[in-house]
Amino acid sequence: MRRLVVWNMMTLDGYFEGKSPWDLGFHETVWGDELEAFSLEQGKEIGTLLFGRRTYEGMADYWRKETGAIADMMNSIDKAVATRTLDTATWNNTRLLKGEAAEAVRALKAEEGKDVYVFGSADLLNSLLKAGLVDEYRICVVPVVLGGGNPLFKPQDREVKMRLESSRPLKTGGVVLTYAVGG
Image 1 (tube, rainbow, N blue to C red):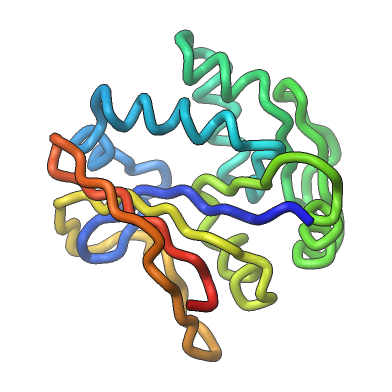
Image 2: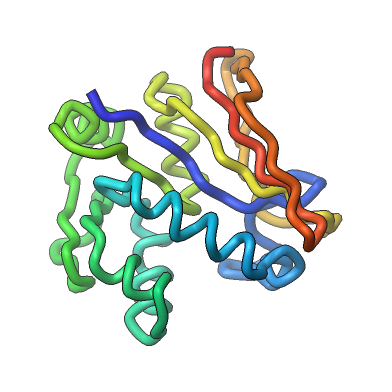
């Protein structure tokens, strides 16, 4: 069975996105050679990149216009979108997962191949975490306090324990933390 691994950047006060959709300016605080190398390194582990619809639309719009090693990776990798509303996916190598997200992702994890990764997609992640489908979180903590925005972790019905697997400080001041879910 494939694992489901989450990769996101998050501010010190818990936001993965600012007060408006796609307000990601705080990413520039930690972006640099180390994080670019890390992104390409973990890209080699990705079998399928999973998105919710809104994140898919924003990522597709952004990455189709970009060039470079990360853009090449993002545009060529196998992608899936958990959606109830999209009828077609126009970004290269993308398939739609229709119906109830947890069931569709459970089937996706059961496929052969490398791990399933989720970037962004906090609402989708909330449902997947509640369903017990998230295996690992990789979070780059950005040394910024936004004071508001879209939190990465939504309120849960239960406590979710995690176990620190590794920490990796960056010269830019960020720290990449890797947690196994179920600590």
